Image 1: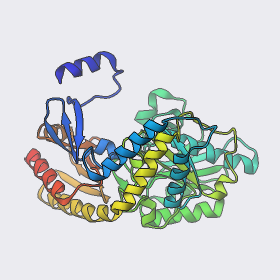
Image 2: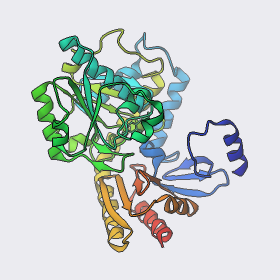
Image 3: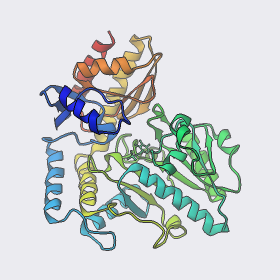
Length: 397
Ligand SMILES: *Cc1c(COP(=O)(O)O)cnc(C)c1O
């Protein structure tokens, strides 16, 4: 592995401090490195590989569908229609209860599209170009300039100023802090339904309901970033469905393609009718037949396997085991999360714990310096949770 790592560091732009491991292939909920060592995966490619890897029966269906599509055609152009795009669009809009979808290549690109949607919606109302978006502190929406501008982490933005203008930051779950920023120029309120990178902070039901009422009253777009917390991770297909607080528009990505790089943004018919029109937005790859075949098959497999019900069950078990660990370990100060999106906050940096777990064959990631994040494949079982807890407890001692 050392040789591969040296070669990688000789050619890749160093924008990540990578763990010193070279992964080769996956099987079930395990990844294997190039030396053949096996790792239980509780990172899932950062909440992407919901169906696990390779040999699982479900994932095989995805592989078969993708192979079939590659043989037919991977890419055409958005100037033409394709059957996979029709099917993916129908299934995703139905699942989200939002009438219109635009397919992208990534999460950040979906956020970019939503920023444009919000600005256009407000522009068509009053013809002015000074609208504001309220986002949340500690949020994460991606690394492109627009997505970075609404990301509530000053450290990520610092060297890249100026951002796109007129972004304000409120505090998650603090409605008063939103009210302080709202004015006649506000065109959208954007938040992750469960904050991921910022440290696993779920939006509270009451907060979401207050935002919904405010946005209805003032004709402001309520936009949810479901890129990490969506696609079943919360025990509902989209995390807002737990409370029935429906956004006007939302972004999804990560597990949407279970490894094929895809994203999407969706909106209600009302917003679609009063925002982007032909010529306003586009993408070369977004929504190509291969990407859409992935989305379409993933949605079928989620339903076939009743994955959301499974997540509710195994998520509750993970939560229980993490709470028990917290009781026993006074370095753990909090456990937060929903379903299979959980965080354990420690009173000290968790990097050494994560490295030790990796040595012992368990993949975990952090979310902020002091928080271990658990975003495993959604197909994990209680047995996998037990194995993970065994390694983690061993590493902690
Ligand atoms: C990962 C993530 C993004 C960015 O998605 P990319 O595909 O990396 O561009 C945006 N928002 C949230 C909540 C994310 O977790």
